[in-house]
Length: 301
Ligand code: GUN
Image (cartoon, rainbow, N blue to C red; front, side):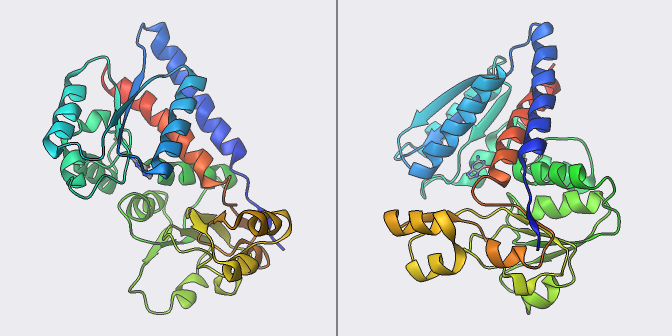
């Protein structure tokens, strides 16, 4: 029987590093400043942005939210990003995704100054990560690495499986694990026999957006599982399968629940450590965004 893998102390450790960086910068009369650009009215994006702004406030990082209407012209958004690039009082720029369909999100990411790209999405930062050079790297994979490194000092030779190949999580995660000398496998929608691949892995990181995809039966006994997924479910049959206790009671009352990509209950029967959803990786992502904002500010000194 495994245990809940708490991310709390790792998130606190990252925040302490960020706080120390903020104090050092302020002592040098530099006021770190993150600008978050939010386009449209996606409810989840509004919640995420609120959390990001609140984290800045807690750490003494100046933040500005720029809200633009869903029908903003692509050129107007690009001009706004370029204005922020030129503004020396702005150290970090984050354009919240997803963007409305009429906007080419790759073009927006390319427009951000790589040294202000706190998300680490710009091709220059993607290249730096692939090559093992210093840069700004995506917050969730960086936070997950901090969790792994706090749990074990040397990851060398461990078999790590990343399920999902997104640019935001899967691909950068694979690079970071490789730099830590793991033997890395990436599985995805075209993988034949996910379970066979999974059963070989000491560390499994799942980021696919499919509620409860990874079942305990897939896992190697004693493995460590990081669940990056966050999915809202409304299907009672799925809720009965994935939830129990108070969470199931709450689902029955409200008709909805947030779950990860891992069947947490069955995973705990086999794995040693499993991060919960909600309350797991999300904390790491926000903490790492604060640290990336400090790093971006330092890059511009
Ligand atoms: N939308 C969901 N996650 C993220 C993220 O990490 N960064 C940005 N910019 N948008 C997101």
